[in-house]
Image 1 (spheres, rainbow, N blue to C red):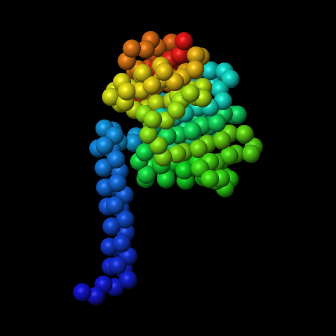
Image 2 (cartoon, helix red, strand yellow; image 1 turned 180 degrees about the vertical axis):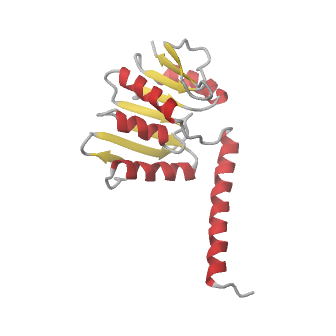
Image 3 (cartoon, one colour; image 1 turned 90 degrees about the vertical axis):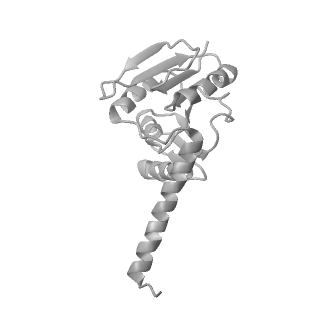
Length: 197
């Protein structure tokens, strides 16, 4: 069977797309959730809350997915350092590329730094349950109930007093939120803000 260049390129493109989709499906199945981009309305609420929390240095986004929320926070909040932790390779690659495009500078290994704003954005492959949150001033999550159940004790153990957690959609079981905001989106998404005592 002789394939022409057009047929070969089409077949190659189909194989690449299938590989990408299979990768996302397998990791999503293992994680219990697929990576979801954050809506603009919800992003605005999260950014507003991040700005309200004074003196932030390190922000960790646990399960950064496609990077949309982390990049929006980094664009809007000067002088922060944001680390996104993601275990799905395709969304991780996309988030790194988007960070590079958003800040218009050449990425350093694992990091994109905007000289004009002092913002540093890093997206890393990692496990949100084994990552150390000890230095985080703020953790941002857009996960699912099972993940929040697992992360609650980890945050209690590792976060320093005064550190905050912002969770989109799902509450931290056993934690009392300092604030709950209902977004004006179609789903009336809730954003939970916690402060570690």
